[in-house]
Amino acid sequence: MSTQETPEEKLPAGQDTAHGAVRVADEENPFADPGLPPHEPRVQDIDERAAKRSERTVALLFTLSMLATVGFIASFVTIPVDKSVYIFPLGHIGALNFALGMTLGIALFAIGAGAVHWARTLMSDHEIADERHPISAPPEVREKVMDDFRQGAKESALGRRKLIRNTMFGALALFPLSGVVLLRDLGPLPETKLRHTAWKKGKLLINMNTNEPLRPSDLVVGSLTFAQPEGLDPHKHGFMDEIAKAALMIVRIKPEDIKDKRELAWSHEGIVAYSKICTHVGCPISLYEQQTHHALCPCHQSTFDLSDGARVIFGPAGHALPQLRIGVNDEGYLEALGDFEEPVGPSFWERG
Image (cartoon, rainbow, N blue to C red; front, side):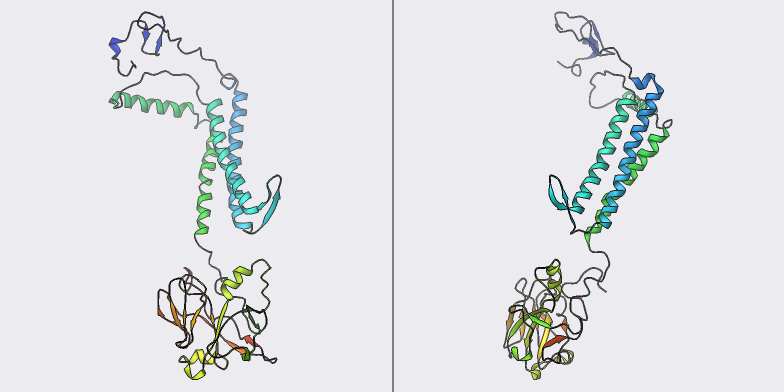
């Protein structure tokens, strides 16, 4: 039976209720409690120089945590996401992931190690035995807890050991900044990279199937052709990012069937070039109906009228497909006369 279930007045003779130790074995308690061993002071308790060394060690660990947190933030801002490094024996790994993992791990470890070293070498280590109590504490017990808390705060020597206190507060204050910096990944920083593509004046329209420049004679009324800017190499880094914005959908419509005046002005002999990227969630558009000149996105069935400025006539897309102004160069090849006038693909949060 535990002491929680046994009233204090019914405890067997010989049990010290103050220290929780049975001094002598008897019939009811055949196994004597040897009690707590004598308290042995630590070197820091009797040598102030050793205590100072421990204090400096704890402060060093907290300072290391602060430096690691600063390193985490600096790594996040300065290291390119696509950079890789060789780390033995791990091999080639992402430099950013390695730097973030190392700095965050060091910051956490240094705070924990500093707290453990502080508790083991400088805080009071007197052993205290206490009997278990009922869950509902009476007022006098609550007062005792507060007294113990005040005593513990006094024994921690935060007021006297200002070096530990200040460096600990610094480490704890800086560390949450790691999580704040990670909020940056909730969306792209306000930049212009989503507003511009690889198209610019003089870029040839390259057939994505044949990898050859296009002539007007290559396109017949009712045909659908996909094109990309001249100079894009599918084997080079960054190709997927560029083609995701610059992919074109080219159709040839009889000029008299084009309803939108700007569309007609930006076309060449009925050849119109529109972004292939759906303005809903960015799926590639690949379905074209010759009779109605409607382009259908296969993902969510957004439908665009390519004879009327590629306006949305059905589905969840929010706005028309951007049109690329095209012409013919001196050699008879189709070329771009500039970049898209508006961002391609879905809307994004900083789009004005």
